Each structure stands twice: as C-alpha cells, then as structure tokens.
Length: 369
Image (tube, rainbow, N blue to C red; front, side, top):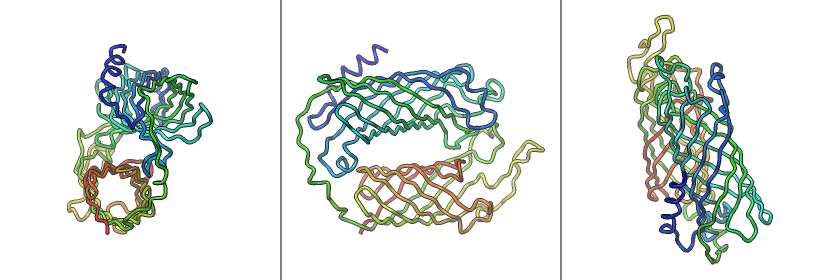
C-alpha cells in the first residue's frame, strides 16, 4: 500500500497544469452486502471492508458547464474490497472515473454527491460445481456503479480535507451471462485528501448566460452485443445471443446542459427465439423467423449534458411487439460520449422494470441544424 501511494504522488506532478486544482485522496471503506432477492441471504456473512485511492481535479468557473454545475470535480480511482464472504464472493478490484458535485458550502464544510462508474474484477463467480452458493453474478468482469453522499471538512490553513460519506455500490454484468442478479452493498467511508498544487486563477462568470447555438438535433444510433436472457436462474447456457438496437431520434436543445428528445427504436434480441422448459430443464425453440422477435417502439426522455458527456434517461412504449405483448414498455439509462461534435459512443442499459435485457453498446451520429 505504501508503494502505491509513493508512486502515485511521485508521478502526479507531471500531470499538474496551472488552471486545474489537483487533489489525491485515500479512503477506508466499510459496509455490508444487501440481499435484494430471495435466496441471497446467505451471501451476506460479515461486513465488507477495503480502500480507495483516487486523483481528482476541477477547472474552476471559467466555462459555461463548470459555472452551471458549481465547479464539479472529475477524477479517477482504484478500489479494493473484501466482500465479507471470501469463500463464496471473493474480492473486488475496481477501476473507475467519477464526478463530484457540491450542493452546499459553509466556510470549511461542504455537502457533496459523487457518481462513480467503471469496471470491476471479481475473483469469485457462480459455478454450479465449485461455487453453487454464488447465485448473484456469473462473470469475473463486471460493471461498477457507486453513488454516495458525503460531508467534507477543509482543515483551516492546511492543504488537507477530511470526508465522511455513505452510499450504494452495485456490481452487474448487464445480462451478458447468467446469473446476473447483481450485488448491492451499503457502503461507508472515511477519507483524507491532500491538495497537490496551488494556483491563482481568475473566474470568468460572464459565460454563465451562454445560449446554445443550435436548437435542433437529429441522431442515428446502432448497437450490437450478446446477452444471456430468459434462462433459468442461476444456471447459464454458457454465453449469450445476439442483441441489437437501431434508433432514429430528435432532440430539442433547450440549454447547453439539457436536451429533451423523442426516438423511434427497433430491437432485435435472439434470446426471444427460445423459452425455458422447466420440466425438461432445457431451452426450446418457439419462434423461427426474425420477424417474429423484432420489436419496435417510441421513447421520450432527457439528456443531461456536461461538456461532451450526456446522461440519458428514457422511457418507451412498444407499438409492435408480437413476441411478448405483456411487456408493453421499456426504459433506457446510461451515457453518451461525443468523441466529435457529430460522432458519439453509446452505452445504455435497455430494461423492463428492474430487469436488464442487454447493454446498448454502439456508436451514433448527430446532425444539428
């Protein structure tokens, strides 16, 4: 651990630039696995514990986005956790990025919210022969999400700040392979951050009233992935089937930080060719033609924008759905990153209720008037 901190602090000066305020933080974590499905109670044996090491910075208040979001911090980190049940759940090694928002500040005291997202490697997964108790996750590599609220105290006349925070951690593979019940944790942490540099910058708050130059945006997006759906839990058939989404959409850009939109969506999910027969413990084919499983819908939603990153939240309704008529609606949550002004990478979860169907991982194009 000491070696990691020394290496981190040794190389950090090479990344310091005059207009950014850089910090390094170390946090001790403690919590517990929270069973959210029947049958998962045995997974939570002892409290979990671990540590975070992260590096973050802010740009001040010199552009529209940082003024509107009250100069948020952005950063990167690594996290290790013993999940409280090493024989069954093993350990977690995560790498993530995050944004931190300041909701309230009074002298040296601040109320903060931090949104984390990344990948984690779990050393233990479900195996029907060697680890049948681990009914939560079937892959080593998983998505890592964490949301926490915290109180930060700036020590007067020092470059140190202390933080006390609590939140929720979620591990999931997005239905790439069953089981995918996911792991949820209630997490608490105590941390100490050190400010790595001193700067004297002037803020340009005149940019706070900038208006978007273009109001209308048309998008086209396509995604491709495999998913393991409609399989009897916790067993998996060993892999997934092809899933794809095609979208044509329109957004009204009402602000530089917000868009409202509507889209027409077409979904192709090869899992829908099959049904699981519990009597013979096997999948059976119930549809033959692609036209039998294609579904089409219309969705409406919102994009929250920070520079090139967008946070999406959409809800939609099927107007063509022969294969599962009782699933009349769907939702889409995730992110888009605009690599260029007219080209973005998409990573969203398509779900029905609280059940993930697959990850809409793909690319898209934006056309603005």
